[in-house]
Every structure is written in structure tokens, then in C-alpha cells.
Length: 308
Image 1 (cartoon, helix red, strand yellow):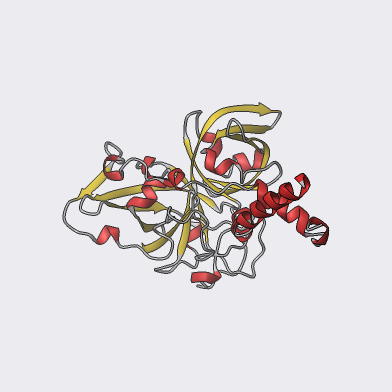
Image 2 (image 1 turned 45 degrees about the vertical axis):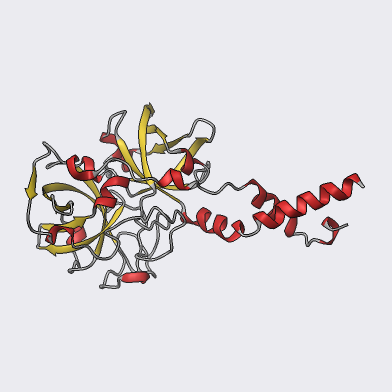
């Protein structure tokens, strides 16, 4: 009788809610300390000054204690859109890589230990200003200094722990994209620049001119990765071809044009990639999570009534 009183929309919502599983806190435990990540990578160690730890905007990447991140930071547009200094909560990214940059230098402040990256670039420096945001391999970072050919960003220890930026060395290629105005065209999808975790390339194979890549992902993320859904890999907006929740892997396919404009095809099997899943799924989970306890109570009551 109670089920019969529910609206037509309630049953599918209850079914969806009952099937959801919240991310365990243990899935977001910090990984290895970043202090030694840049050894033998051409890094300059700064023992005294703490200026290399100064960050703004989204430089600290994720706060892992809250896996369902707040929507803040950046809003994106495509390549040729208005980029007039609009920042803060009105800006984001699209996952359409504008250019491949190169790590010119990096320095480590062992006191914090924070890292300063200097990167060579061209396109993303158009309209740049101190405090603007640029996604580096999909990580939203704040520009602290720039000129016509280079820009500098700070990277916090937490960012090094949860992304692949700790594996960069002088000369490493990186995907770059500027934050863009909220009213610009979005040729990719809504990308925050808040990396969820890293995945590992486990297999690649060609399909005529296309390239398939199979990526192993942490179990806590695979439920957000669905066939034909969005995912950002090293900041590139891509479509999922296949996903396997039991074995925690998924595949993507790159057309020839994309292969020549991003870093991913040059990475070998075993290389780490930054992963940011579609934030929409997280908001759906958060909005429905409060119903889970009530659904469990309802199921228990229905089972009791059926026995009577």
C-alpha cells in the first residue's frame, strides 16, 4: 500500500538511490610524500625560502576529505572565446587542449615542500595575467609570474600526492588550457581542473588511424566512468568507449587529429595519467545520498508488510 502511494518518479529514484555506494574515506588517503618525487629530474632545491609554496586559485587541487567537491574555481569555453580576465567562480575548463607546453624548469622548497614549475608556452599566454588559472595536464594551477614565452605556477604537496605532476622533469611535454569565460562555447565538457586520482595505461592498440587506450583506475572512481560518458585524462575531454566495474578499467579512442594535439598518445604502457570524472555524477550521488537511510527503512517496512 505504501509503495502504491509513491509518485511515478519516486520508484526509479529510490531504485537508483539504493544502488549507489558512497566512496569510502580510505580511498582518499594520502599517497607517498612528495619530498623525493623530483630527485634526478633536473630540479633546483630551495632550502630556505617558502615563496615556492605560495598558491592561489585552485593550486591546491583537491581536499581529499571531501570527495564530492564544491563547484568553484573555473568555467570553460573552447579555443576561440572571450578570455578577458574573468576568474574565480565564473571560470572553468572544457578539456579542449590549446597547446602542448614544455617544462622549462622546476624548483623544490624542502621547507614546505612545495614545487615551482616554469613552463614554455605560446597560446595560453595570450591574455594572461598574474593570478589567472591555467590547466597543466588537467590540474588547475594559478599563474604567479609570466612573460611572452613562459609562465610560472606553484604546486602544493597535496597536488603532488594526487596527480602525476610529481613525475614531471625538465623537458616533459604537458597539456595546457586556459580558463575561459562562462558564456564561451564548450566543445568538450565541464572540467573543473580538480583531479580525482591517477590511472595507469595498461594497454594500447591501433584501429586503422585511430588509437585505443585501456586505463586502470582506482576502484572508487570506476562507478562514475560509464560507456559514452565524459572523462578528462590529463586535462583532455574524452568519451568512454567501454568500462569494466569489476576489474576497474575503461577504454577510450583517439582519432588521428586528437593524437597529434595532446600528450597522451606519446605515453607508454605503465605511465600514469590524471583522471577527473564527470562532476555531474557526483552531484547526483550527493543529492540522493540523504535518501538512502529512508529507502532502507522503507524496504524493511515493505518486507514486514509482505510477511503479514
